[in-house]
Length: 393
Image 1 (cartoon, helix red, strand yellow):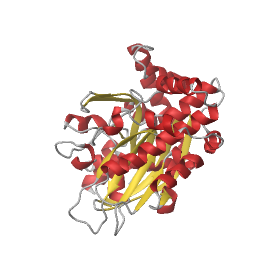
Image 2 (cartoon, rainbow, N blue to C red):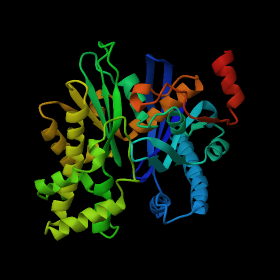
Image 3 (cartoon, rainbow, N blue to C red):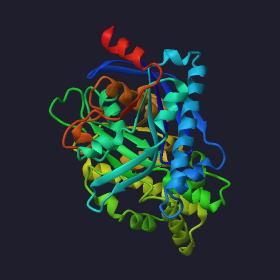
Image 4 (cartoon, one colour):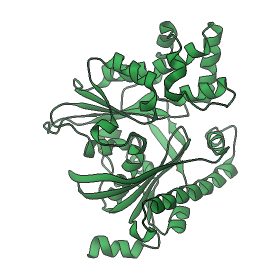
C-alpha cells in the first residue's frame, strides 16, 4: 500500500510528510520511504500552537480554529508530497496523521488521564480525497496505557537487531527510547518511555536569549562554546519525572518555555554565560537519557540508534557518546532510516495496521491492559474502492 504519514512534533516547527510503501503483516512487514518533505509553518503559526498549549493563554475558540487550520496545512503537505513523487491522489491508499499534540494530561501518579492531538481529519480527507486515519493515542489510553511513545511499535517491527539488545532513541522536543530485545530472544519484551526533555528546553532558551531571532542551537555551536557547570546540571536532574519508573510519558505540560526561562534566569544569577547555560541544558538532555538507561534498561545494551532533530546537534551527540561509552552510538541513517522522517514513517505504518484491523502497539510498550487497534478512520473519496481493493480483491 502507498500511505502518507504526517507528523508535527512537540517543537511544532513544521509538518513532516513521508510517502511510504508498506507491505506484509507482522512480523514480516516492510516499510520504505518513497518521498519525504518538511513543510515549515507560516510565520507566527508556531507561536499560535504554543499559545494553544497554554491553558491560561487561549480558549476553546482558538483551539477550534487551529484544529481546522492545521487540517488545511496537513492536507496541503500531503498534496505537495504526492506531486513531488509525480503521483496522483488516486494512487495513494491512506493517510496516517498524528496531528499536533496540544495537551497530554498525566496525573501525579503517572497515570495518563487523557490526550489531545488536533488537525481535523475530515479536512484532510475532504481536500485530498484519501481515506485518513488519525487520533491514534486515545484508544491505548482507554485501555490503560500511556498512549505513547507509539513510534516504539515501528521500532519493534523494523529495528530489532539479530543478536543484541538495541536502544532506539528519538530526540525531538521530548526524547523517548525503545529498548528492543534481539530477534534471537523469543522470551523478553520491549520497553518504551519518554526519557524527558529532548530539544524543547534548549530551543526555548535560545529563543528567549535571542528575542526570537534564533529558534534553536544550530549544530550545537552555542553549547560547544560553553562550559558545563556540573553542579548546576546535577541539580536539574533531581526533577521527579526522571525517577519515575516506566511506563511513563511527558510533554510540554511539564518541560516547557516557562521552565526554560526560569533555568536561564537561574543560570545568569549564578554568573553563567549564555553559552554556559546552553551547554548545561544540552548536558541535562544527554545525562537524563544516559541515566534512564542506567536505571531502566532491562539488559546490557549492545548499541544505541539515535534519530530526530537532536541527532543533528553535534554537541549533544558528542555528550551522549561520552556518557554511553563504550556502547556504540549510531544514527538512524546508519541502519537505513531517515532520521528526519522516522516518525512520519511510523504513523504511515500505524495507519496500515489500523486499516488491516491489527494492533498498533504492544501492551508492554505503553503499559496498557491489552493491545488495541488504534485510531479513527475518516473515509475519503477512495474509501469504497479501497475496501474492494483490500478485502475483495
